[in-house]
Image (tube, rainbow, N blue to C red; front, side, top):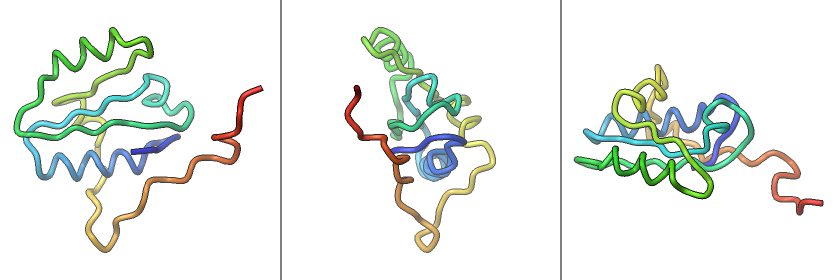
Length: 103
C-alpha cells in the first residue's frame, strides 16, 4: 500500500488485517515509518508469519527496511479503525512531482 505523512491509510489497513488474522507484519523504510516522505509499505497477514526471518532479511537488504510484527504492528495501528465496505478508500495519491525524473 502507499501512504505518507501520518500514515493514516496504512494504519487503518493494518487495523483491518489485525481484525481478521492472528499474525500481522508491516515492512517499510524507516524514514517512511517516521513520517518522512511518501512510499510503499508491505502488509503481511497470516495464521503464522516468520517474523524473525523477515526482520533478518529486511535488515540485510541493500535498501534496509524495518519490520513491525506482533505488538509493534498493533502499536503501529494504534487506535485506527478498520475501514468498512462503505468507508473504504483507495491508497492516497502521491504528492505532485513524486514520479518526476531526478535531475
